[in-house]
Length: 52
Image (cartoon, rainbow, N blue to C red; front, side, top):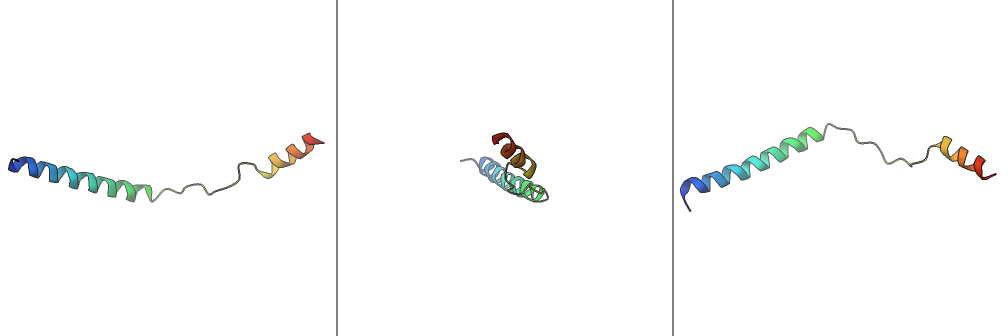
């Protein structure tokens, strides 16, 4: 392979790795919602009233 092609591939791989690390650092600041049940207390109260 030509010498410039090897350097181009190395730079592309390093660029992908660095960009993925930057995205991970950026998304680490987000707060994801917790695992809550899909129904709230109000919804469950209405469901029991409708059954009666």
